[in-house]
Image (cartoon, rainbow, N blue to C red; front, top):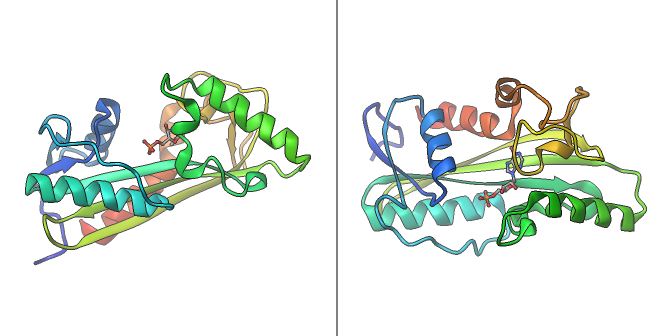
Length: 199
Ligand code: IMP
């Protein structure tokens, strides 16, 4: 089996989040026909692993084996140095069932204050995994370093974007032009690594 992705292949995006499926499809630049795990009626797996790569592999593996198609999955989050890498793989869960990121951001700020640390460094991670049905899996990771800034600024992004200032910049991801964020983001870097590995 060749571990490369030929143009025109039908791939399953291993996500039940329509926004993420669209984002993954956009990043694949029309090279492939992309269907989502939700469209195929596949079950949503737990995220049992302790790393981004581990969880991306579990999601891709489950979708590939259940659908018989090559599957692409991602797992991402924000890591704060003074919080020993938290929220990390729990980034989405810190926002609770109502996905309230202003609550998640307040939790990050409160915990950071509790540490009495003056280290505001943080980084975003995106892991991507491609799995072949009952076959191999390839996983890569992208990371962008920066620092946290409070109060939150900007409403152009999502999640933790309003408190993250990338290294060398002064605007938060929430204030930046989305194209400028996409040019340097953890997700873009993971995709570059994936393209180098497979396309
Ligand atoms: P998951 O990959 O679906 O487990 O969720 C990742 C979570 O990490 C998202 O819900 C966001 O809260 C956060 N996250 C990941 N990437 C970004 C980003 O680019 N900006 C802001 N928050 C992000």
